[in-house]
Length: 291
Image 1 (cartoon, helix red, strand yellow):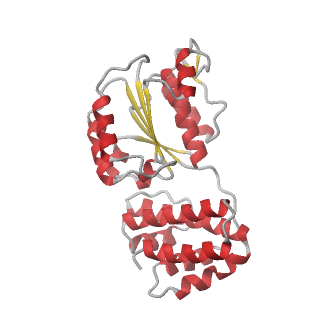
Image 2: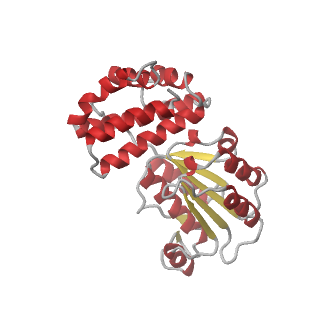
Image 3: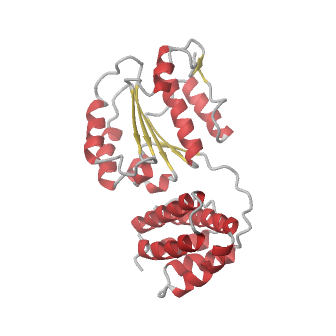
């Protein structure tokens, strides 16, 4: 029996334990969605891909066999990767159709083929529907590993045919007041733009608070998307605020809001001018919400 070694991968110990049991019992599902922070979800997916093509005698991935060496170099013929985190346009319909056709061809070297789809939250509904066809009638010896900031960003039909593993860690208190977030969420969809500009004015002077607000807002919007899609998990601890936000917006608009907050986080990490960043964020959030 081969053992799954995930000691070097960060993330939820409970999730890693569950995956190890499934792997050791030969019961890993043909399609998995790993949701959570990018580093953790992608690192775990990469480790699972390596373990899937590893030929080591005990723990996998062993890091020493030809399969592991090729996987590390990105040259294994049975691991196919599309990186939607690096390029949101990485999932054109032609690429998904190619995966669908290739999935029915036997593996080249390993016991199974692995399709690594990083950042699947950026996959269009058209591409997801094309992928769904191979999810519904999965060939043998094929494994799909999708990673996403939130599984709620994917179609319910995709989610229902894959096993979801959430890597969200226990959250520390950010110091952002729930009442402030409630007002902020309401201002995004308010009739006028002055409410949002007023609420975010002080963030220009305090980048630490701006970073905390962006993080909390991202989780709140994520919760709104989950509730809008029929889910029940609420990470923000503010189900009423999330429900109110989700009730007034379509799923597509909520995902567009998530994208705008993530763009602002990346800009802040690059030390962008806070005044310009906050002003652009306000405009972009309202535009994403259709206001």
